[in-house]
Image (cartoon, rainbow, N blue to C red; front, side, top):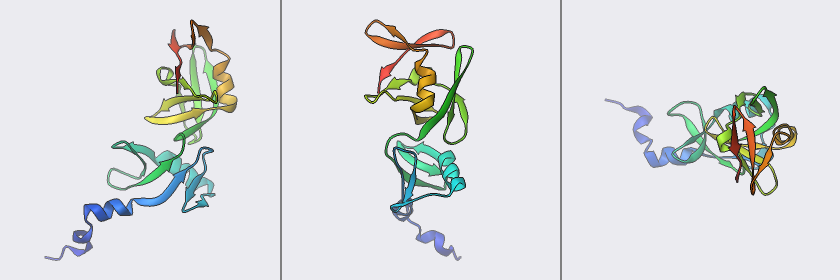
Amino acid sequence: MDTGNAGMLTPELLEKMRQIGLRLDRAGVFWHDNAAVTHPRLRQALLRWLDVRDGKDIVKLDDKRFAYVEIEDAHLRALSARWDGERCFVLWDDEQEAELDYGSLAVAEDNAFYARVRGLRGRIAGPAHHAIAERIVERGEGFALPAANREWPIASA
């Protein structure tokens, strides 16, 4: 019985093939072997394929087809944030909007916010940061965000 080339793909070889030289920098630019990925649709696809598997950052087509990606800062960057009553919705650079994960909100030394979004790490700076920051209140020695009918303490990132 002929098994073709499938018998030659060892787990070690498959793991090596998943190292494709893909990197996402702090500004949200994908790089492949030190060349910027400039095609807008490819960039959007890569952002939507971002995932985490066994603690490693990946771009995932399906459960069996994925490759590793080096993430320098955050998986996604917030483009904007808007309030609908007591709820905050963030538009991320993968062009998907999601309600802010208030419980994961943290502030970094550079004053940018970070929050979880669909299991990924998101960076909130610029206009989105301002839309959220205008509602932050001082509480004791820290800060909190009143949203979704409660106050959410803001941790340090």
